[in-house]
Length: 160
Image (cartoon, rainbow, N blue to C red; front, side, top):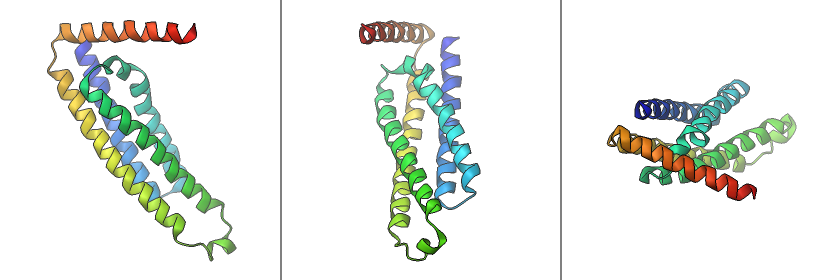
């Protein structure tokens, strides 16, 4: 039962991550800025809820290490995209006539890097799902129990 719950949560996280990628691309392509920003934040939050929540039960699996590096990269690049677009919006109309294509180039580069990181993240999530599917229910219970005990010990260590 635990295995099916974790697989369902993982699939929901992957779906949120794919939506996050599509929305970030739409934002960098110039779609409705405020609505798209809010939607990105929502999709990112759904993914992060899994990653920082139940996803932490899977940290000892091999595929999870790739996820961690790609999540960090995706967060940074999403923030860069939002920052560049925010700077473009804050620029007065008069100043925008004299704006160099530098901000557009930075936006394009961040967007392309984000898409690459996001695709790698999707593949890592798929690999994690395969790894989890290949485990028995008792292996999954042991994995969750061991990670829970480790995280509880780690939190106690950090507090003291």
